[in-house]
Image 1 (cartoon, rainbow, N blue to C red):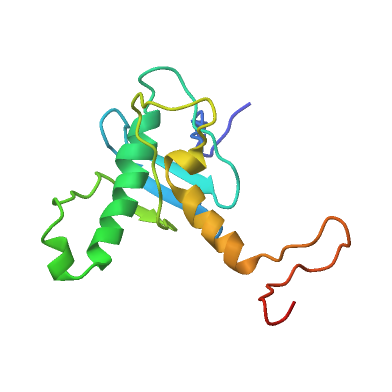
Image 2: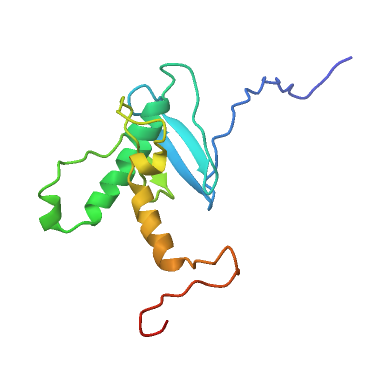
Length: 158
């Protein structure tokens, strides 16, 4: 059997996992190369509890603290006036191509701190104090006996 056409050689296609795509409701990091991160792309969903786990040396702290928190803190510092910035240490930009969707962040230092068994993230970061003030101003107190709103009284109104 003779064939007169060209024979196409079939190549094996190498399947490369696609990089995460930027999502409107996500923080997207492209090309992170901080410490032992090797040019990674990550999409982290917003408004969800996200836990970063991995073996020792896998880049958890490099991603969360040295990349995300450092960039959030740097952007916040850039928004301050030149007068305020003169009192702050210079903050270098993390080695990434870009970060999209990042908002202000808080970080709890990775160090042993003296705490009581009643300590929480809220009390350790002092956010608890601000929440107490907020709820005291906005909240309404109800009587457990009558179920009615408790109002402020003075000697003139009682």
